[in-house]
Length: 474
Image (cartoon, rainbow, N blue to C red):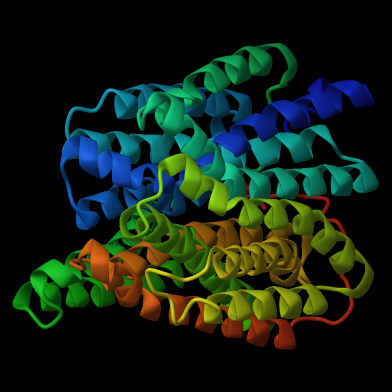
């Protein structure tokens, strides 16, 4: 798997130290996907901008992350994983400082783009480092279980941690908090993490990369800007046409390359295609929930950031508790049952809020967030298992990379959809305006149920012996 196996950590303590160091970076990437949501009202007030610009504050990071995950893994396999990992940490840390010091929304969005570039060098590269360091199948399985739990935890605790930081130090603190973590991770990486490269690194796919970013960014941009431009305006039509043309170009280009950025042949497998759809819709539901929750609680209900974060605590706790339980279920009975549970809980949670108003009881809100958190916690492990189940070992990493990109695209799409639904609504009408968003969440849950119905009923416990460049935070 690596070009210098002699430098693999020899002791169990050292191997798990490598895992801990890499998990720090993963926590940063996942946290920054969600922590900014709770800060949006404070950012909007501080920089005097509306919902549309605030959506870009979140999606500028997520879109770049989604578009570059696979290519960053390829670069690391070619030039050295530790080297690229350290460079990603530096870029991420510097961009975090720029975000914290931003004087305008334009500067903040630009810094978030750079943050996404740095983040794309962390999660896929860190997992490749972990898999290179921990080669014994059972030990590696436990390590990846810890990895998945940390990823789910980082996504779930973002709103709660963000609320506490904003209440104490203001919205800029959600970016400053990254700096000490980056510095500590850099030092630990220098001390404990060995260098490694792939024996046969994949070629970089420049055309595919450009077209993928165009497709992902264009689709989300149309959703975010649609309410302002008008869905039937000439500008919107140009946007639709560009997205369609880029999609056709991407499929044509990737189907003709010997080493494509994304192996489209994988989508001919029903289980894999279903898993990718599941990854997208789970994160559409999760991200839409976070944005709608933030705007509703702080604008319509007048809660502080810390109070709004506390209300979402059931979501964070449920996701954290259920993620490892889901992994156990996948190992014992396969992905079908966890996916059915995930879809069912998300659906019921969304339906709880389809009649939301300014006086909806706190108990119902807490119940809805708890149910959605349970669903999110149960979803990630079986989606990854479904994606790689039945694939050759040398395709497992590529499949994981595609599903990770699908997750980030779903997160960006969820923000765009939820924002488009409530854009322009006054604070007094926000609850009513958000109702279609909760229907979207419920429908996403039903789609996950459908994914569960086509997934395998028995676990594929085989652990790939070779992880490709696309190894990701799953």
